[in-house]
Image 1 (cartoon, rainbow, N blue to C red):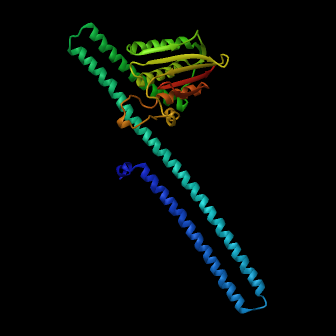
Image 2 (image 1 turned 180 degrees about the vertical axis):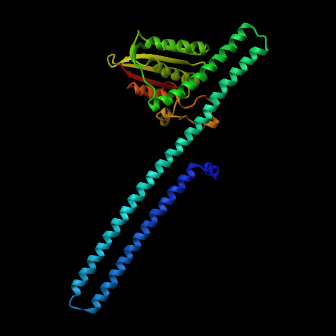
Image 3 (image 1 turned 90 degrees about the vertical axis):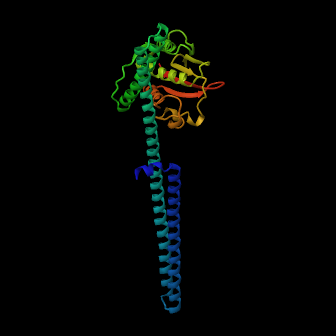
Length: 328
């Protein structure tokens, strides 16, 4: 039974929900009209009986039933509006909660699919590399190439595990940051040099000024830079450069880090969503690029914990620019 419900598209459930809500509102309106008509009918019958009796208290009786008619009308309007408001508020609340749960379910599903693939691939590649070295006599150049490939995949696995563990610690408040002043420029150059070694065929360009110092958690800030560089390598064509720059903004009160790629770019409607946990553009079952949807979420969380901001803009002529602003 559960599998049957999981196969029903959310759009179909959405249509059924709004149809039932409209039916409920229509039923409420119908019952209100019925009560109003019944009230008017009772008033007409009572008025007719009083006029036929032609007693001395006719005027008082007419006033009494008129007051009763008006009181009933106000009661029906008040009760109807109260029930309508409660129904609408309850319907909106249920809709928002169910939609949020459905989105969370889809994000967790995508995450499980992605993380399973991300875990299996480095393990399989590393195992294949070791088996190749064991079974075949290779020249030194080929051996070095296979070993470097295994190291890259091991680094991917290590980075994935670190992201998952760190994300859990930051959200639970279990991670205690140790903010110290460090050389932001040296940290950036070191990270870029590491990526040059991992991806010797990729082009890295940087515009980095004289030493810029920043007071924060160097490990976390470097993790943010590594995530941005990893994404840039992932989505930038091999013949296009990845541009890294550091600026001093607002009379040297803010450090600005930019990582620009020349990939396909991010649609405007997705620019804020990419920072959500587990969120990735497209369907996980049809995805060709690597990732788990944790990198940008974790990076944004780290920057916010440093009282900074992170956003993405369009690069020209194509691609994306991730901009990190950190107050000194």
